[in-house]
Image 1 (cartoon, helix red, strand yellow):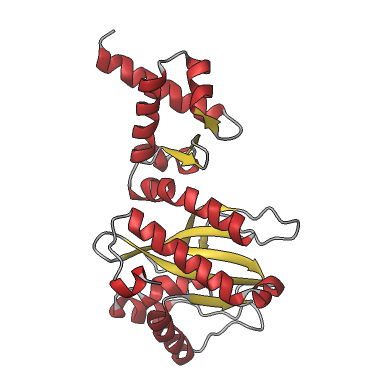
Image 2: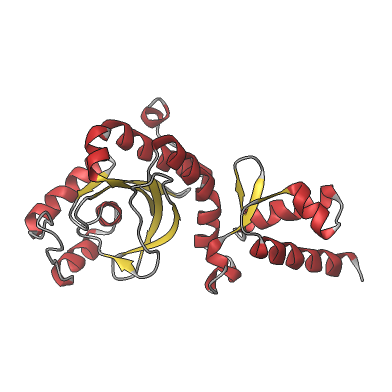
Length: 260
């Protein structure tokens, strides 16, 4: 077996091992399980992380990217890479604030698709299913993505999307929503306070790529009572996390944000 074929086989065996593992594993665990040299195993794991197929957690522990389990993730792509870069940041933010953290991207119709989450360890916590779409008009994630989308696309979305009152707090008036989106662009974060689910509040911030385009959104899903108690800390935490993820994607922060 030549070296290229051997490396390809080892990559597949590492992926299979990560897929079987119930929790993130250390480099030594992979070496002991598969019997590969430590240096080459580390190199292969780093390659898988760089391509988005694996995620490096705190403490140099590795796990398969969950996006790879359900089909499309196996072909790589921007979402897989984005998730791989985001998960360590999301885990740290969850542990720092004690709340659930979500990563989302815009769907073609303007609504939001969750692509990753790091769920709070608190007994009473906010969680959401990653399957399906979340409406953009009444969620913090969606408002970020709408605020930094093309004006013509936003106009079409607000004209055609069913703006339903999902709770007594849901804002459905178009003029009011346009005012909210203007505030989001100015302030750099969005809040949805019990508009999607009673008792749940979301606060989100934009994630930018190297070109400065908003390609994703980082969001805290919070039990409303706890958000009311720690509003400033949570806004500061999620905006800092989104800035860090943006820099990992190659975005260069403006000088005023670097000093923040």
